[in-house]
Image 1 (cartoon, rainbow, N blue to C red):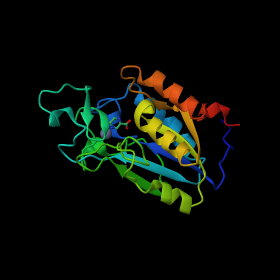
Image 2: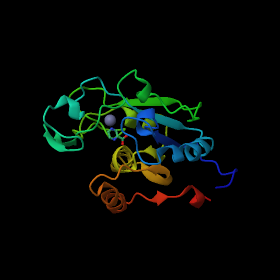
Image 3: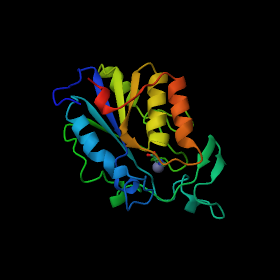
Image 4: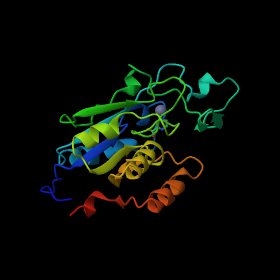
Length: 212
Ligand code: VGL
Ligand code: ZN
């Protein structure tokens, strides 16, 4: 991507969950997650509008396997709102694992959206919690700011990036996934399912080198 490529005032970069717990050494480490950080940093420098999301769970969150004695890590349970994968304890509010990775550079980011902060419901998407009904408020923010074209980067491609981009598209935003700026967990075919679903919804997966 050219150093000169910049984005318009109607464009926003949404940087999803670039937090210690999703990086090597973290509680829910996404393979090679740290590789995206320089890519995200150089992307962020080209956007006037940057939003960060931060996974932000209370202790004992219902998405943690440890909250469900007898259940296994990465097992899917039937939550009242639908299927829910059980994760290791991660991104606990105020913990170092929940902090953004120290190499992330987006000082001009105007908004941090925290999600998953209600004990009884998880939130993969930056727009709606996993009941698909409870809004985070991000849609209102973006609309009021006149931001219409959204580029998604970060972690994990097959969970929070996927659901965020899909909700964006369903709400009428133009949504793009910057694939080389993402890494996936790839749990039981979730990466293949992500590509199929993004394509079905008309959400392009771009590489940063394709932008110009
Ligand atoms: C995520 C699983 C649990 C993500 C967050 O950021 O993709 N995945 N919490
Ligand atoms: Zn989480």
